[in-house]
Length: 393
Ligand code: ADP
Ligand code: MG
Image (cartoon, rainbow, N blue to C red):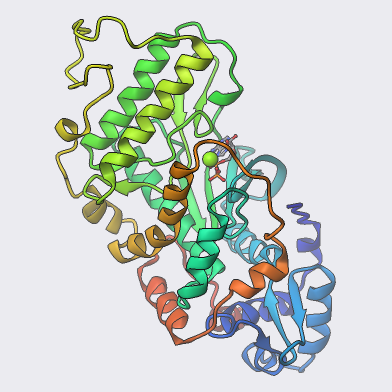
């Protein structure tokens, strides 16, 4: 998705006030009635209608008059709210080029005041382009308490919390700088995703290092769940960095063994194919490592994971609760399992990422209000841009 932040410069305080009013209204309205927007925004001189027209022109809102006259945020509108908040906090001062398009995210460079370039990841749950799309949509249809904005925000919060916790345990991950709404700011990783690398000096060493990470994470009670050549970056010195954490689970998850084995298998498969490593020979050879492996050299989950409660203790400290984990797992897990069933073959985008499709997935109801409120209380890296606060400025 194109992110043209030029319009940000021309948006007034009133524009943001009305945009924020729509965001607030969306906590319990799929489409926020125009009158309600005007009421929440309560501009001093009225005029919310004119502002709405302007926001519509910039594609920050979507107008829907099918049931009643109303508006909802587009992803661009949500982007603008997050970016504006982070600009106000002084986290960065400029948005640069797009450096990555993930399955469910867009990644851009941003620059801080002193010129440091950081990475900004905008989560876009719901913009799925793989097989799991159907199961996810079915799931959401039956779970009225979830919507895409909420899930994208949860994904960002989770990613931020895990990145911070992993960093504190000296895992090679980007430095978690800040997060707001569906947006995570982190340090920019030098190098390339492993999938783009055709040759390395020491494939054996790189392989050992990467498998070592899966093992050490499990020792700390965690499984990445999407550990593959797309989510491992490598630089010219063959230093590896792992990225992409919204789907991580604890080793006490009921499918932990399957996820762990699958992560390991992805790495074995990739190194066999790309760098011709062979793992079949001399399985009994003692390579000096203390990791318990099976006959084929694959680390044995049961003897590594000790079921430590990493998630509960350390992540709660970052504002990510067990409840958040359960909420997001219900959504992402369906995708993970479907992916595993369907092999690595990707299906093309089926066009269901259109605004109207997203729109259908914004669910109204008391439940979503409840969830959002609950989340709000636990987020400390995300001081909400509350309308009330804005109104005081
Ligand atoms: P997704 O969850 O959508 O797969 P990722 O976090 O894997 O998103 O990011 C997608 C791509 O963006 C990565 O493959 C990588 O090329 C790039 N990228 C993500 N984070 C960073 C970062 N911190 N530094 C540099 N590039 C990054
Ligand atoms: Mg990825």
